[in-house]
Image 1 (tube, one colour):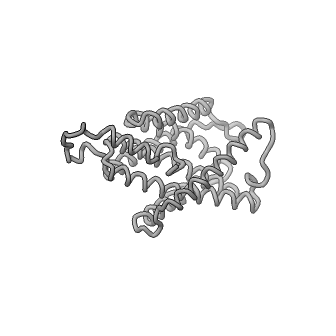
Image 2 (cartoon, rainbow, N blue to C red):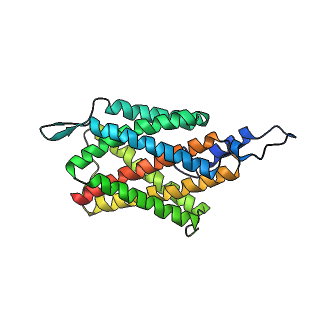
Image 3 (cartoon, rainbow, N blue to C red):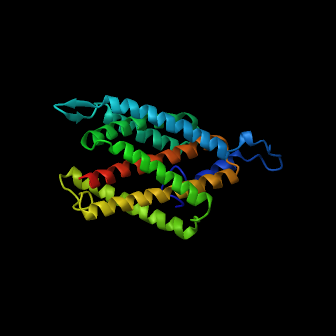
Length: 256
């Protein structure tokens, strides 16, 4: 319950650290090359981000147009399901992260690229705005965490977890109702309630970044194995993709 991001939680890092620990009575090398580091996590995050961008370019260009209307590529839902499957595999098998995290980034990038193309066809320039806002929020959260202006306390964790769980529940209910042809009023509209709801979700996603940073720091201090650098980077990508998509939703409501 440290974070709603299933890829980043205390038990994951603690288990990895214990698995990596030497047998009782045997010394452990102090060479940082066999442990998770901040620099290694940053490098892995940069690589995964680049792969998301490569996939996004492909997904963007794969969107076709019929009479001026955008049409999703036929493989879109396959990629969506594949991305979910790779994510689940990575969460249950963190040791595979060196391979699965890059695969996830590429596949998820194609999905994000296709969605971005659809939004941009309706609201010109919205993608650049969403990217800029996402990067700005990331920079602000890094600053707030690094300077300890906002400290990740137990109460803050519980509050963010509760808020994220509420958002997840609303989205699940929305999907279930949608399967029966219904619609949840107000929150998905472009009125004041809908805009405030999207602002709240963007805020929750932003604060999840603080929990991710905190968990990465805990992993480094626990001496987690080096594959956890890729696993932690995967978790950050999950949060950043969520934040970006919520930015798109918010901006589209404001445009309407």
